[in-house]
Image (cartoon, rainbow over all chains, first blue to last red; front, side):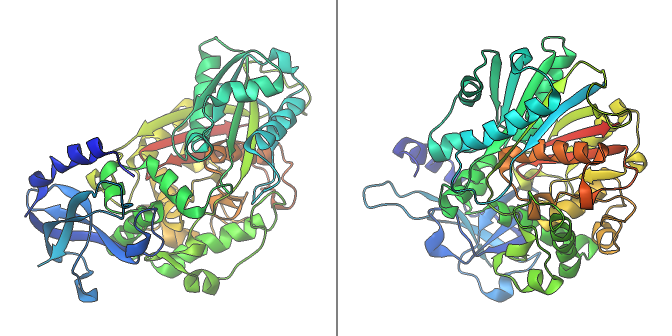
Length: 99
Length: 383
């Protein structure tokens, strides 16, 4: 669980990565998830490369099995990260959607 | 550099529910001190390699936890460098001896992992990754799965070649009574086991293990207690770093830190990779051993899978690798692994490895990796 202030600080950076397009370099499907992500497993995560050459790891959303391949084009979107308790702050972050 | 490995001690590796971290650390420490023939009051410093105990049991300040139980008042340190914590502890102990600050040093690598549920261990291990990787829901199997995919895409490495790593290391572990999994497995077993993070399966992965190892290192280079030719010395010790975030690497299918640290350590030892007769490398996942073979220079880039599948690194091959069973089958108590690697090579060079003895081995190498290669520690040992 992240503290409210770290969630707030992380949210300041979301805009810097929103709406960027790029491509999948490599991907994997996670079957055994870490704490907070168990309810989403299995889910795919890819290292994506944006048009400016910057790379980062992103969870893929709204995908089909046919999208899980190198060079598949993606766009970054805002989504909820993991699962939190009823009295905890919901954290949002960047994920990638095939286009 | 010529640092004597004066004594070694190693616990059984496995799910050791009847033993605490302290029980394991002390068992290994007393064995190493007795093996060294050095009075415990002549130990000048204790370096403890450990990654997780603060997170999963709330116990920090581990140096004095060990020294107070040993009943000594020397300097003590806890060293953390993810899964390279043990190797880093060895490296720093050597620096203390080389600086002339200490003469005799005890290095303990210890980890108690099975007290916590697996999802908590998975989360705690991710402390060795980047913030971006944690937010993406990645795990260490998933990070190594990404490297596996990159290696398969670039070089055509196959699932069967990956499985050969596990099969070989389980064979070696079947000859090691201290291994977590001392039994053989088949290629079929690896290929059909549960998927952890595609394409990595359960049997591509090292287990969650309890265990401890300890060594006494000494500036004293006499050969007391052991016959000539069986005294073991560390002659090279180097550490290198790389980006904590895997995505920022120039290449996803190699560990630059292994290349840098091995070059330095071999130069210190006055040796080349072709001189190495035995190695313990960091096979946390099968792809890691394949990349290690390539990055250390045992074979050319992209041929590691075939090199291992052809039997060169199996007992009886040209350079046996992971005769202990490696992380995969001997087990991976993360803070202990780097120390266990030194113990295995020392045992081999002393010619006391029993059924898994490599004939005429006089020079060996260890590779201990932290995270996805953000830290790599290389040691060279010689008789």
